Length: 175
Image (cartoon, rainbow, N blue to C red; front, side, top):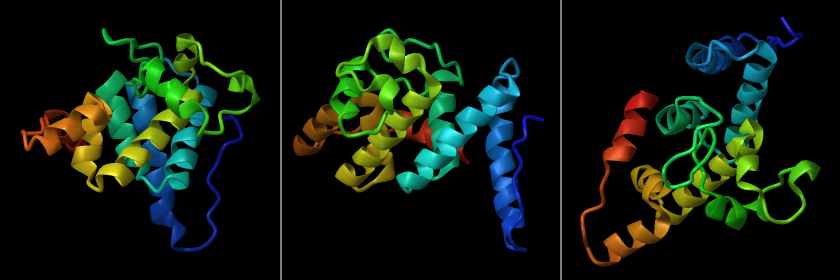
C-alpha cells in the first residue's frame, strides 16, 4: 500500500470505513489500470468535495460512471471533458468561484486542464451543488447538469416536459 489507511476513531466508524472502502473499490473496479496512488487521489477529491458541498460521494461516483465511465480523458461531441464531463465554457464560468489551487490560477482554463481528475471533480461537484440549490430538486439538478440550466429554466417557464432520462440513469447507478 501507499501509506493510506483509514484509522478507526470509535466503534461507530466501522460503517463509515466500509463506505470509504466502497468509494475506492468502485473507482478501482472501473479503472483497474489506475495505480493505487491515482485511485486514492481521485477518491480523496470525491470525498473532500462531496463533504464540502454536502453531496453524497456515492452520488458523485454515479455521475462520473454515467458521464465518463471513469475515463479522465473522455471528450464528448459537445466538447465536455474529463471524469464529470464539464464543458470548457461552464468550467471558465465556475473557475473564479472554486479554489482550484495555484496550478490553475492563471485566468482562463485550457480545455485540456479539464482532463485533470482533481480539477474536474472540484468543478463538477461545485456545479452540481450549485444546480441543486438553484432548482431545489435533485432530479432537476441532474437534468440541468446534463442539458444545461438555461434549457431546464426555459422548459419549466414554458411548462414543457423536462426530460428526466439522464437523472434516472444517474439515480439508478447511485442505487
